[in-house]
Image 1 (cartoon, rainbow, N blue to C red):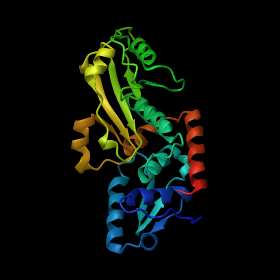
Image 2 (image 1 turned 180 degrees about the vertical axis):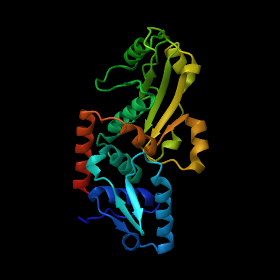
Image 3 (image 1 turned 30 degrees about the horizontal axis):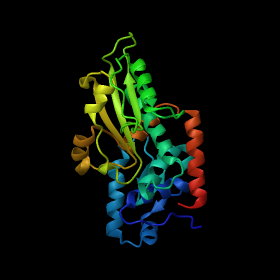
Image 4 (image 1 turned 180 degrees about the horizontal axis):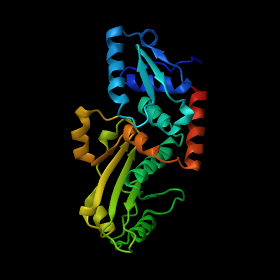
Length: 267
């Protein structure tokens, strides 16, 4: 097995970051040219992109100096971010349980961001959607409305975030988050609020729609996706807020095992 992950056109930045984190081995411009088969002009563009992103990370994952990209972490220090990179690079059609892990990662990042609480639909116990809605309405002190159709698993929402005033009243802050670990997340349908504001009788003014993605969403694509899905949690935002606090022990254990298995199998 090669010590480097194979190059993939169209996923150049993910390829670079995966290789940096996998063994915590610096990458020089000349080595990148050799591994990718591209000339220096193209590689300079990739390095420029990494430079422009570096300072957006609260704790940068790499340092760039004299045409060398130097990783600041090994994958097992930030395995949740490594999982995001893996799926951005390879897609999420591997039936390995990683998509469920991404939901948990997204939920924890959202929880830290709002400094509130989350309810993950279907985890850890696979109970029915309507039972989940019953529980959410109680947690949020909102009146339960109509029952959902029995064919719906979660009706497009994976995590409900809520920041309560803790006074046993409704009208709190709510976030409805759908999690998209796949490459084609922009093709997903937005959350249908015409159903969600009937399941629970909360006011739309208190609700933020959101989507999480393993991708880094570029500025040129930001407005289109934000106007479609609401608040965007891309892998940069997930990184910045997930690691604001200690990662849940069970989540870290499960993600670390998943990532280690992928590295052993060969990315």
